[in-house]
Length: 265
Ligand code: PGA
Image 1 (cartoon, rainbow, N blue to C red):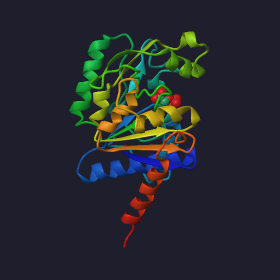
Image 2: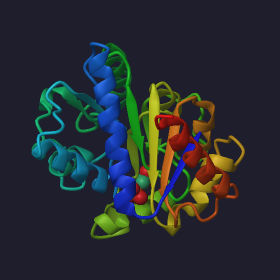
Image 3: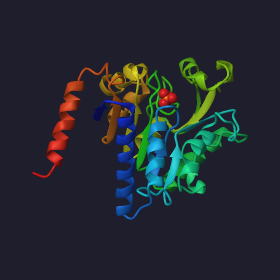
Image 4: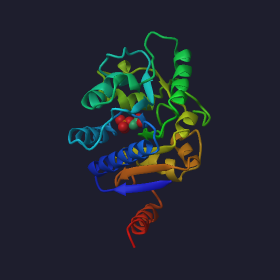
């Protein structure tokens, strides 16, 4: 795993935007339209603002990009202001030149949930898979809505949300009772099929989950630890989120070596 520790949340967002731009560039160079896996929540908002900025200044176009979001609540219509359909439109899609028909968020409203989950898997496959999957991490170590105990072989499916997740997300709702009790989420195995993964975490409340993800045992007890099985994962964190990493000094040395080896001799 590549672990990048940066001084501020802004630096995390800029680094993430550079990675997204780089993957888009590489896909196009190999004659393919880029396929991005997107996340919601508070953490990626800075990344999305950075991408919007780059679109506005003419340095990045999303005209040929396809996107797949990780998850969607069950029980909220797409136009509900806390649905992830709504979040994506408001936070990114309506500000860039992506074509709405090329964006996908799991369908959970007035449909058969198991069929919807299966169809989502096929849609990702038919698009040729995901080039870069963006992830946040829950305070309990979830990725997407793969809560504790999620099979490391799980695919897109219905998942009950933990009390911890509902309480973490209650800040967006009038009360915790309004937070949905379930979601459709890509599974851990679905996420691990992305060709590259970029996990973003900021703030001290993520420090324990980040340490478990990077340095803990691989376990469904901390679903993000499954990322250790993937050969192309970058974890980008601010100092607060990195504060419980035992080997932070080594990760910083590794980044310095990387820069040195990549600069012209
Ligand atoms: P957050 O959520 O970015 O709002 O902290 C992350 C997550 O639950 O995956």
